[in-house]
Image (cartoon, one colour):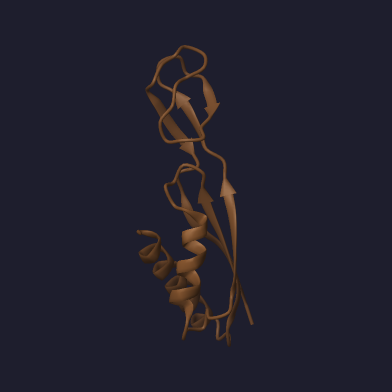
Length: 113
């Protein structure tokens, strides 16, 4: 479960930000997770709560926003939505798709007190 190490990094980023800003606690962490990033939002939420215990992030609300998967067919150049990392171009039948969005995971915002 790689979500555990990802959650540890998210908590570290949020805690370091709160400390740097002189905050007492983190209220909310807004996280963007790409639809084709291979990060399970449910697992991330579970791990986040576990690793936040005992830190400035404990009790913070985790808001996960999904970033839609998009890609470009290298064969015909068509732009298309992607629901999985691999797929078939509906225009030419090609299988050489280059993801252009939806593979990322990033901390979008942190609300602190």
